[in-house]
Amino acid sequence: MPSWSTIEKILARLEADDIMPQYQPMLIGEAVDWSALPVEVDPTGGLMDGLRAQRKRWQVENVIRVLQDLIQPGDVIVDFGASSGNLGLPVAACFPDCHVYIVDKKPHTVEIAKMRMAGSGLSNVELYPGFVQEVTIPFEIGLGLHLCGDGTDQAQTLCMERGVPYVMAPCCIGFIQRSPLSYPRSTAFRNVLDRQEYNWLASVADWTCRDETSEQHQRGKRCMGFVNTDRNLVAEEQGYRTALYTMDPSDASPKNEIMAGRKKEPDDAVSD
Ligand SMILES: C[S@@+](CC[C@H](N)C(=O)[O-])C[C@H]1O[C@@H](n2cnc3c(N)ncnc32)[C@H](O)[C@@H]1O
Image (tube, rainbow, N blue to C red; front, side):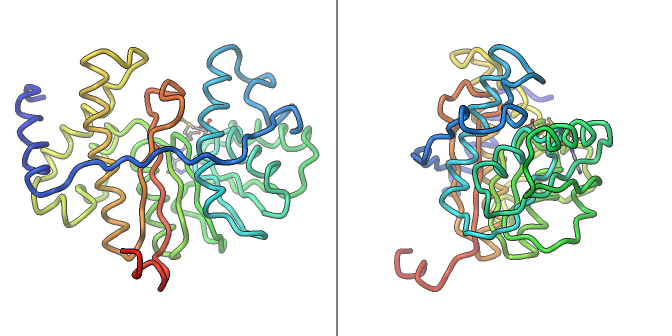
C-alpha cells in the first residue's frame, strides 16, 4: 500500500476533475414502528443482541427511508445478499402490498431466513437462494444492505440492466480488488485513475471504524465516499438520477453510506 499522501494525490486529481462525493441529507421518512411488526423480523428479536441489534435496526430504517421515496404499490423488491433476512423481512412487513425476494448465496443463512419467515406469518416474501448474478425474475427495485465487495456492483448492474431503482449500502469494499469486474466503474473515474490506484482507494475505504473521530476512520470514509460516487456515476452515465447518503445516526455502522438511483424520467430534465 502506498502512503496516505499518495492516496491524497489521487483524490486531488479526482477533485481537480470536479469529481467528489456529494452527500444529500438523509431523507425523513415514516419511522419503522418495530412494535407493530412480528418479532421475527426485528433484528433485536433474537438473532443479534444489544447494540449490534440496535445498529442493524438503524441500518434497516435508513434503507427504508430511502426506499419510501422510490417504492410503488405492488412492486417486486429483491433483497440481494439478504442473509437471514434482516432487511428483506422488515421491508416485506412494512410494505404488505409489495413482494420481496430474499437472495443469498449461502444456503445456511437462507435456512434461517426461512425459519424467520415462517414464524412471522408474512405471505409476501419468498426465498431465492443463489448468487446475485443468477437472478432472472422480473423485479422493480433492488436492495442491498452490506452486500460485500463486488456483490454490490453485480446487484447494481442487474438493476441498471433492468432500468429499475437501486438502494445499496455497500461494505467490504476492499474485496473488489479480487473481482473480475472492471474498475473504476465509471468513465469519469477511468479518465482520471487506473485499476491499481482504484484498488488502493478501495482498500483504504475499509479502514472506517467505530471511532468516527479517528484519522483512520476519516481517511476510510473519504475513500468510501469516492468509491460509492464512482458507482453512482456509472449509473448516471446510463441515464440514472442518483443520491449518496450517510446513515443517521452515522454510527449505525462504520459502513454507513447508502447509494441510490432511479432512471431519469422526462420531467427530471426540467429540474436538471
Ligand atoms: C454482510 S452480509 C449482510 C446480510 C444482510 N443484508 C444484513 O445486512 O444483515 C452479506 C451477505 O451477502 C451475501 N453475498 C455476498 N455476495 C453475494 C453474491 N454475489 N450473491 C449472493 N449473495 C452474496 C453473503 O452470503 C452474506 O450473507
